[in-house]
Length: 177
Image 1 (cartoon, rainbow, N blue to C red):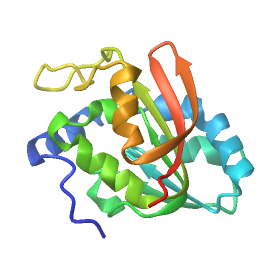
Image 2 (image 1 turned 180 degrees about the horizontal axis):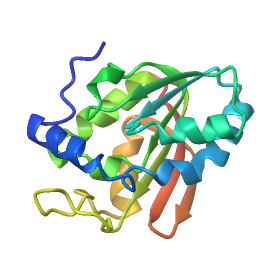
Image 3 (image 1 turned 120 degrees about the vertical axis):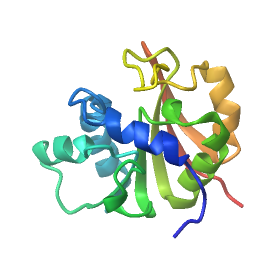
Image 4 (image 1 turned 180 degrees about the vertical axis):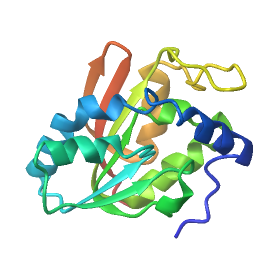
């Protein structure tokens, strides 16, 4: 179990409120076919969904026929999920741009701690279409990939990089210590 602080209590409450919106936290659904393929290619037997929200990724993977994979959801807005757990594949889809800047390094360290083989991270670099209940844009960090990549490289090796209209995604591996 990690004793890292990855979110403030006030922001956790804002996220819980925002998750009441059925259209919030749906980005992972579109990535489910790619995640399924990645699970199969790397022979992963476990999946940690960091920032799982309403577990839409797992629901989509189940509809795609994924079986025999242990699923570990983690989201501070859903404390009932428990702490983040190590897994062969760690997914963090449309989450990092929502992190409070003061906690970004802790979150990246936490992700690196639980990534056993591979990680799949999708990061938006543009403003979100949604706002927080306090009026701020839901994407607290709106920075280009050139800003993100050095931060990611402190914790991971980049195995693959791809672009999408709102940002980019990477497949990462743990750094060799």
